[in-house]
Image 1 (tube, chains in turn orange, cyan, blue, purple):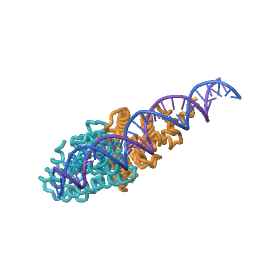
Image 2 (cartoon, helix red, strand yellow):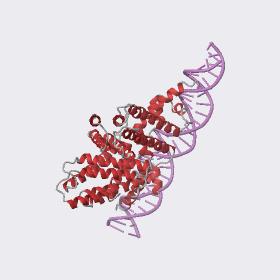
Image 3 (cartoon, chains in turn blue, cyan, yellow, brown):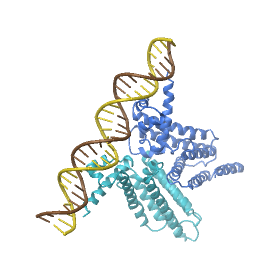
Image 4 (tube, protein in one colour):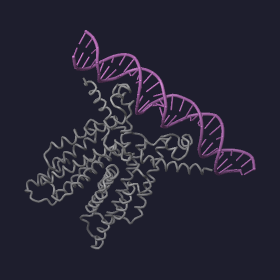
Length: 219
Length: 219
DNA sequence: TTTTAAACCGAACGGTCGTGCTATTATTGA
DNA sequence: TCAATAATAGCACGACCGTTCGGTTTAAAA
């Protein structure tokens, strides 16, 4: 009894995601969105109680999309360093737009857009970004647990550095169109991985070699 | 004969800068701006040929403001590493808003806002950001020249890493309100400086010690 | 097939947007 | 001081914004 509605609603969010990724969250207008999905303004409006709800739904959809195309596949990889490398790889592809969205990450745009405007939208982005950092941190902790990384590694600092590189890539690749962005980010990430590995103990020679090999595979 | 006009124009740009830093460049509206400087919409509008020109002027003013409060003072410092550290220090203060602007860097916001919208505005931001990176690179090259950094340092990579950390700080400090942001960024920057220093030759022991000391001073 | 509720449209509302016009006030050079 | 000119205000415009409401179509339930 509630079939058609949910379907078009997801279509709406899909289109909304595409627009928001290009025009920003506040650049997403109901009229334009309605036109892009072939609905009337009021017809579309009926699916949400107001613009705020629509924007929140878009952000939520953005998180879902990010988790599905970046986090989930990475966390399906083997624990430890391979997982972290997969995560970075997926993430960069996500930013490039190779993964369906034309205009970079909606969440990064929203982060900058909302960082000075208190309210439910900012709260949501804040929370989702904190979760994201937490997951990076956890991935690092797992790598420590697997003896890929040294035991005294500051995982929070690690997560911060990693995220900074992602932001740097976003900036260089999207705005500056710098073709070296990929080289830079992987060099920095590999350095980061190496310094996280440094001083490791109790690893068999062969295993250590494997790790080094894996770290370089994307270059 | 052209006195009053230029004066109020600079007042307008000052207010515009403040608004744009909070609401974003596209969130800067003529009506609101006029109200904030106590002018009528049309009275203010007469100073610019259109909204595009206004936005360009704001971006230009943002660049000037950044250069004046971050770059210029840093480049007044001694060549090499001290200059780079001063640059980072000024930059972080600038992002915090301690330097007159309440809402972070207008240019960083604009970068994300415009990275998918071709046109004169994007071109301007692109150019100014490229200049900025260039200056970071030059600062690194000078440090190499001064034998603070090793001779085979990839200065472009150095500039990229440094800028990534700045972006990371912007994200963590502004959106996430993470109090550890300062710790993280300085730790990463110091690591970066150290790795840029590593393998240096022909430096007297005492000099080397001074450098290390300077690198740690802000922690 | 009929009933009934969900999905959608069209028109209209008050606001605000950027932008022109004309008139009025301030400022300035002579 | 006085004319010239720059600076500003007032008003109106078309366009689009988010939102409401009453009616029509469409799809699910019976």
